[in-house]
Length: 563
Image (cartoon, rainbow, N blue to C red; front, side, top):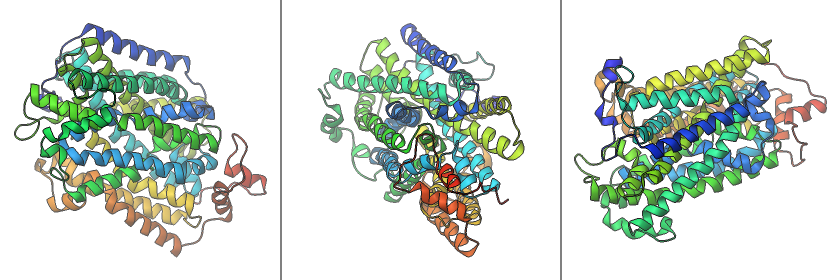
């Protein structure tokens, strides 16, 4: 397998100065050392701090963590890359990811905090009184963490190549990109295994500051240096658009209107179903803090999303002027597109240390998101499957050990998959959004807003969602790893149910199946209905209190799983 993966020149971005650079290397190594130190200082020894940071995070700090958790390599690097390579189609990512957070703010943040659990599968299992539903949600969470993290590993490795140079052959059979995947993932897994959610949250606040300063400083300096802009590049880049070609500026030249809608819809519902996003609402002390931290998170995210199209425009023009034609044959490769933010600063002739600062921001963005993904994935295995289903008498020490082993497992399989990624960063990430949108979003939305959603309906809906997500993945993505002759099995299916936007078809079907089966079967217990009603009650709850606590105090009893 290693031989087949080795020396894939198409993974190396053209035009990027791949060599060891002393100052950027010191900068990045210092940053990675800081992350490890914070992880050590805030290392955890109990499950409350391991999974929900002791529910002690304030709204601004949680907002920064939401921003860093959310703005992965797909946002820092991939969004500008998609806009540069695909023009208006790339804006589907800006619109989809932003709109998803508004739905979270309005419909789900406070309600989820009032329900008050440790993990996303924890909510599914308790809301639907089903260990089977909990297990499906846990497996889905693990899958999302795996698929999503592949894009982050690719981003870290590409930026690492620029900073540290090509160490191809240091690990036998692996080229420079692949060696960097192994190195970056090893560091990330190391600090996560130590710190859990508490240390990850503290790190994410620091990582947000690094990534937003690096991104905005890079944009402003590139704009001023090349005469593109003065003080507001987010608007001034519009004067450049007419010179970038129809592929950049004209709607639906590169991709169809249908694909734009499908992608945007999948990103919206996927945002509302991503476990590492939802779990942030469990780390705060009250529903009010949950709402305000979402507002802060939106503000922090907006700063980068507003700026990404400008960076894409500057990078596209610099690439066309200094490397070659961006569009046509061969055009800009996906690897070069994925580092267009770093490439633009390098092509502007800026000092090496400054380019290193922008590169460090990309690594910080990727590590912050991997942290959230791996914590969510490992908690699904440790808390939801091991503790709730396999060993209910597990000690805290055993739970944390299983959690740390789960992080190691996630790190290992992500590293293997990232050695030969199937698509650019943002596309890889979007597969995880389709999965979250098809399987988890309907369960959270119906579970919170329709009290008659029951166990049978949830199980039928989740299995339907998993099946509908898997079909286009097998049709399009699996062949890229050498199966089925390397070709898409059914081009017609890929056109109308693309892997990148399959939630457009899947979500309505899952809603219909879940509602239909719930109506045809027995209603959920009154205890469960009371908890759902309490999540929407206008009466404020005290800090650390949950809807289940309130119902139990009113004379209710804990409802065990029905299966």
